[in-house]
Image (cartoon, rainbow, N blue to C red; front, side, top):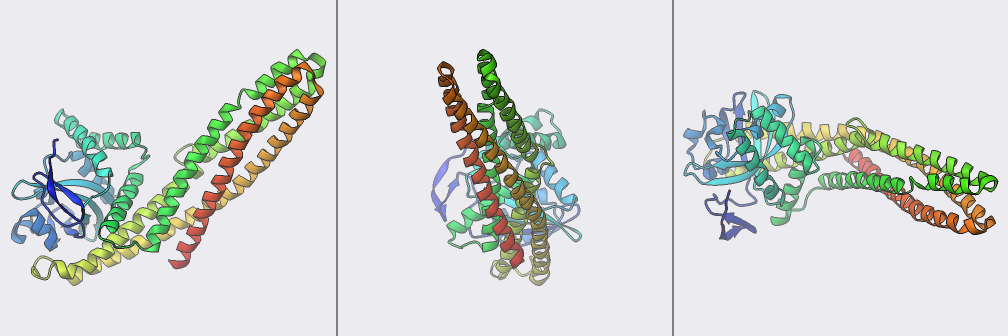
Length: 415
């Protein structure tokens, strides 16, 4: 797909050739029945799509679907909403005159159907999504079914570091709302900022645990080298051999702890990560829906037949409240798992203390040896370096977990 950038822009957003212009501050709204037939919409939706309201109402929402969009994306959206969950997805639409416009659609189930609030995407994520959608579309043209295309989308996103679609939805919506807020110079609420800080912290904890495992692997050969040295010393190597066994056992315990904490879909890390990202997503959905209610009046002032403003506002307000409540409930899991992590970190620190004692014993033994003392001193130097890395990672995990705990407490207090 080739796009040519034109010279004009809106709020810093560069327009492509054939793109329908609309302002970054504007928001789309539409509601459908359970079959996807349009029941209500706002003035922005009508204007940008290029259709009269008479043509929109009663028409399937796919009226504005662009042929560049892979069907797998819509399969995934409908599947999530039918399960009672909200979802965010990048969508390329087509106006009546054949031009296109991109939106980030925040779609959710409601009584009797579904509704969607959409904003202009301005973050860098869209440029990652466009070639991915092109791959899906090509695969579908080759015979791939929508459900299979959705599965391929999830695998592609997994390759980009998103372990599930909720993680992608959460990051995409957060990035777009943050980018939009900066462009229209409208600060975000503290609720959303706190969730964002927690999301950043939990992913950094993941990076720290990976670095810690690397440190463990780096000293995995140390106990074996100590045993080899001990075998050369014959009777004098007894203490060194005992130290190597003790050190290896402690490394095994620490490595197992990190694996248990961080590996698997139901690991403590996965539970706290998914709870934070779900809470973040729902908090930003509530923010977008709340702003949409405030914009109804000005956007429909000259087109009162398009939407029953009081009725649609009530729908959005009720759902925004529900999603904020769900975000609050997600914090209970975060609070529990963060508390467990704090206690586990204390256990790990005790293991580190044990490693320090073993290292000191190595230093004492190296001082009593003559020619072999230099070889043991080299091993001690390696232990010093690797243990410092482990201690630094553990301290950072503790700091980040403390940040999560403090933000969780503040969010629950203001819920």
